[in-house]
Amino acid sequence: MTEKKTSGDDNTVFVGRKDLMSYVLAVVTQFNEGGVDEVVIKARGRAISRAVDAAEISRQRFLPDVSVKDVQLGTEQIEGEKGPVRVSSMEITLGR
Image (tube, rainbow, N blue to C red; front, top):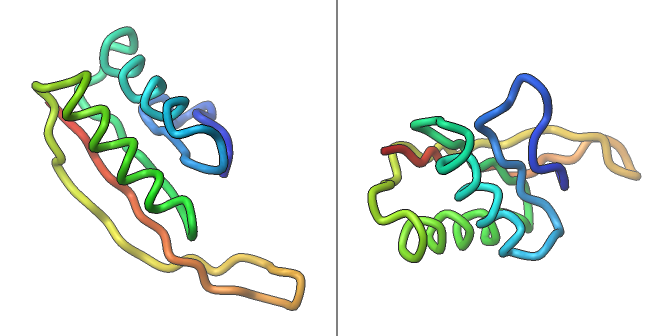
């Protein structure tokens, strides 16, 4: 999950291994240039803490009129080297 967007998920930011500010920029850009009222930040596993940081930095420093609308927690099953592995996942919905 290192992509910022995929087609069909125009208001979604997928958090992976990139620099934290890359995701903050993606969130701020979605709100300012994308013309959307909600942005969903998605992350799995070790990237969850980076997703929380990106949401909080975006909200506190750059988008004071944006708040956390919803947080979804879950577990996804993915194929690992030794078979199926369960990984924690999180979705943070930011909105005006």
